[in-house]
Length: 279
Image 1 (cartoon, rainbow, N blue to C red):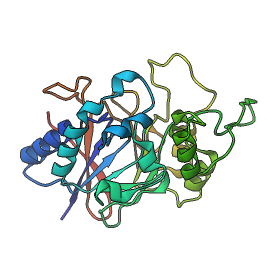
Image 2: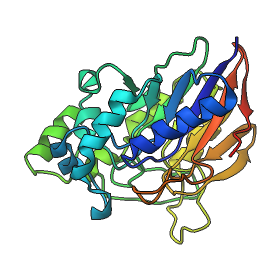
Image 3: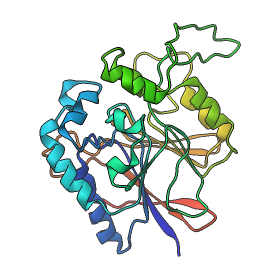
């Protein structure tokens, strides 16, 4: 029997919307979803004090919603594997605490992403690019940036707790994590990154090179899914099918979700294909 996979875009802690919509998809299709993957910014702020580790605009800070998140997490019933975006409870992820998530979540900073589908190869890279964490060059790009001092993720979490470094440091992936992915066998079935491998049209400024593009070019996944820019897009990079996913909903009180927030993939034990998601 084929396995049905849902890949979801940025949820920004509105987990109750995701639960409702995944239930609706199953009802419409008349079959269960076997695995859910998240491209980050899921926002599992299960406790009110987790929000102190949130980076980004104050509009994303909602400790009053933690009770609602906990309720939705209690209702969550799908195997879930995720990478981090840049708005997460990073102290629970970078210093990985699986017991905090009741054993219901698989996660990776960078590398192979554990999941429940036998034979399916999935790689993931958590976080976003910052020039202080890596230098990315080719012969025509003589570009330099001051590097951050190196620390392990657990060490950096402690530095953030002590207010010695900005929580934003927890959101930036590292050079060695890219090398870790480059060293894996090429051509996985699915790659998850938070940012796009190409510049979205709405961005005015761009660094000389996108590490996500190098990642796709080097490991040549069949599908690559991303989020971060709160818009959806479909395109190709050589043999790789790219799917950029929308944010689930911009208004926490919304009764509908944005189109393109989720895609469905189907695994037959040997091949991965896209299944059209009806509205």
